[in-house]
Length: 329
Image (cartoon, rainbow, N blue to C red; front, side):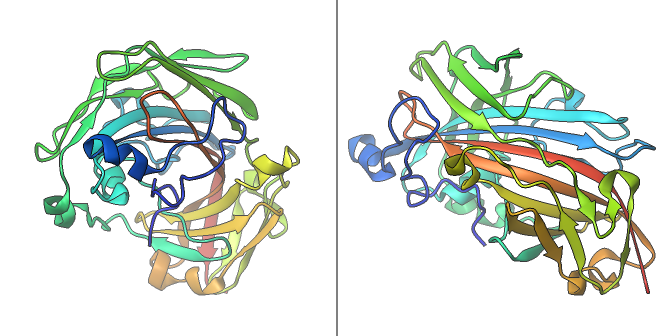
């Protein structure tokens, strides 16, 4: 299944609503010049632990493999955990964008709205496909800063770890896992430029985080009890923002067992979704009773246009997380 976040040439010929500048060009237009494409991948993530006994049992956000050690959230207490990363990749126009994103740690698997998938920690097809991947250069963009009305955050440039001599260069990340990331808010991303990439500035609007989340009759903050084999009704307050922005938003729910297997279901942002009972059973989540985390995410993907970047996308991912216990009826 193609990740929802893959920067395919078909999905990124979109109007740049809520952005400064025109829409991104088709990849083929850039490839006609020199056979290479520059892609910009920006991720802004915030997770809030609602559990009153407050220790993270699993990573609340999908941190880049190359993220800073300070972004390790194992054992952290209550409160927000955040992550911002930015990568500007130069690669052959013939390279599979999905595989490139996986190699640099920016892939995002999401089923279509109204459907579900099972994510296993053992799933990793990247290594078997590296032979088909050309080299990827992560470009130095100079000084990169993210701003909101209340926050100014210089991002740290980091050398990317070796991946079979296929990936080299630098990427950018927030300096710690507790930086303030307001939502909803307008975000401004600026770079001073370098010899490899022009100076740029662009904006993207973040949605609100999920609020008033309930599972069945229980508030997520109170912890929820799920019956194995029975569908779980998840409710939240639907976003009431701009209609064009709401059309971009997707709600997805992860139920992650202690052994690391997760059930992921996605829904339109209507305020209600159902996790099928067929996925809440021992064959998926392990022996019962099982302790799990239940995370409700609102994600928005916004294309951006910037000088020197052929294809650009900002992905916001805002979530709230609580505890769940699955037991046989």
